[in-house]
Structure formats: structure tokens, C-alpha cells
Image (cartoon, rainbow, N blue to C red; front, side):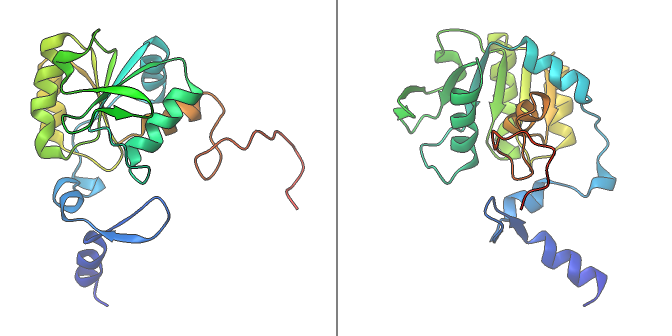
Length: 193
């Protein structure tokens, strides 16, 4: 297989959480190759500072479907962190027993972090709304990279984290990250049998 055919075939698939390949044109159209990325996001120390300072997180694009990444992240945030978590989805009423809001404007408080689970083409409008309500951080989930979106959000005064999972980052900084992305609850220097 030639290099060109290999890259085309690889770009038409994305690995899902369970390891199987799923077709996704949106991800391919949005995420440029690593060498083409010009925007530089905050380093690990700055990302940890964002998470340490935050008290509330709004998940835009939250889903009640347990197979969706936003549901997995929401479950972690509710069970393993101190954050007040808000769900934004105009098509849902309740997720994980919590009310769902139609927009950032309808939240009872300004969230410290707006965590986005939407495709790249929708994020400029979310950044505009986040800036309008005074939220300081726009966190764009793993798999989304768009230099223009990051630059636009920064021009509005938002601190931007992009192509990072807030659950993975939080667990990483709080010693709760296992190789597979969860905490085993076991601390041992012995090799597993």
C-alpha cells in the first residue's frame, strides 16, 4: 500500500473508545496533521492551574447516551471531582439526574470552564457565547483541532485548551489515571500476575 493510500485510508477512520474503527468525516475534515498545527495551547502546568482554579464546568453538547464521550466525562466529573457540573443541550431535559440547560445564557451561574463536545464548525458561536457571559476558559475536547477556532476564542479573551480531554487531564494531575483511563484503586510496587 502506498503512503498516499495509507494516509487516506487512515484519515477516514477514527478509533472509538472500545478500540474499534468508526467512520467519521467530521474528524478528518477538522483535525490537520500534527505538523500543520500552528496554535500553541497551554502546557501541563497551565492546564493543571485551570483545573485547580475552577469550581464549575458547563458541558456543551452533553449527551444522555452512555456510549458518548460527553456522558463518560460527565460521569467522571460528577463522581470524582468537586466541580459543579452543568449540562447544555437544547434537545434534552435531564442527564444523570441533573437538569439540562438550553444554552450557556440560561445557566444559574457563569461556569469557570466551558467544555465543548461539538464539531469544529459550531465552536466559534460557543466561544462568542462563553465570552459574552464572562466564562474565562474554553476547553475543546480530544479529537478537535482548529487553529482558527482557538485564535478566535483567544481574541475574545478566553483561555483555550484544545484537543485535550478534561477527564484525562484531571485524572492525570490527581494520580487517578490508569493505562486504560480509569483508577484501579490499587497502589502496589509488585508486578501484576
